[in-house]
Image (cartoon, rainbow, N blue to C red):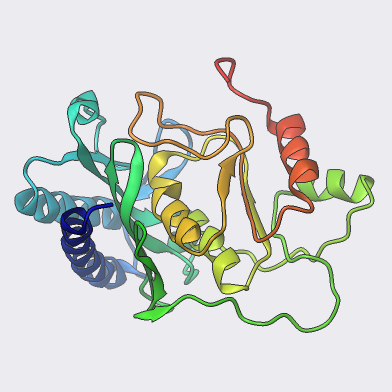
Length: 272
C-alpha cells in the first residue's frame, strides 16, 4: 500500500467513525421505546429506527463521497455499485431483533470496500460504549487503543456460542467447548474473537456483506482469519452478497472440524 493510499483510507476511517457515532446517537433515541416495526420478506424485523439511521448515513456519507457506491441492508440494492472502485457497506442496526427486545449488543456497522476488499471499517456498540475500528495494514483499535486479547484463566475448552445443531454435532465428535454468551449482533460477536471474549465465532449460511465486512477487516488486522467455510476468505461487492456459513477462530486446531460441521449442517451454494 502506498503512503498516499494509506492517507486516503485514514480519511475514510475518520469519516465513517464520525458517522457511526452520530448514527448511534440517533438509534439510541429510539432504543427501549415504543417504535414502529415491520417484517421483511425474509421474516427478519425492521424498525423505524433502522430506517432513520439508514437515511442519515446515506445522506451524510454520500454527500462526502459522491463517487462511492452504496450497499445497505435497508436500501434497495443498485447493482451500479459494482462499477465503483469504492463503496460504503452499511448495516444501520446490526442485531435488530435484540435491539427491539432491549438487548445492548446491537451495533452500527460501516465499511469502505475497495475492489472487493474492506479498507476501513467500524463496528460501534453505543450502549456498551465500544467502538471497534480498523484500517487496511494500519491496525485495529477499541476505543482508540490497539486491540489486545485478554488472558484466559483456567483450562476450559474454547468459548464458542453457536446454534444448537452446531454444538450437538461438535459434541458428537468428542470436541469440548464452552457455549459462551449470546451476542445478538453478528459483527460484535465476530470481533469478540479478537478481544478474547470468545475463542470461536460462527454463523449459519446467509450472512450478507453488511453483516461481516467491518468485522472481517478488524479480525484481519488482529491476525485472525474470517472464512466462508465453502469458499474461503469472503470477497465483497459482488452481485451475490450472501455468504456461506462463516467461522472466525484464533487458532486452527479445530478449523477442519468446525468447517466440516458447518458445511454438513448448512450446505454450500451450488456455484461453490
